[in-house]
Amino acid sequence: ELLLATVNGRQNNISIGMSLVELAELLLELGAVDAMNLDGGGSSTMVVRDVVLNAPSDGVPRPVSNALMVWTDGGRY
Image (tube, rainbow, N blue to C red; front, side, top):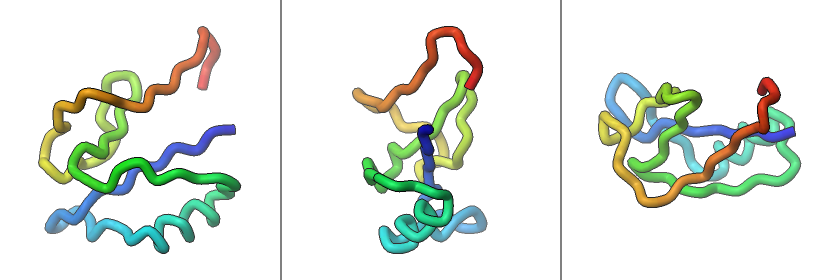
């Protein structure tokens, strides 16, 4: 089982972000056993099937040269 989470950064009327302690508490509540924090900046964006699911703090997704990608070989997720 895989749990992926993206936290919106500080943006007026959208989000106040999260501290690392708050993120750890959230992941524990969601049942995470092991966790890794990858990025806390404006490049944090979650995209599923070409749809941006969060509100990137730059206002739009930032062009990046690397990404963590997850896919299946034909099954449903």
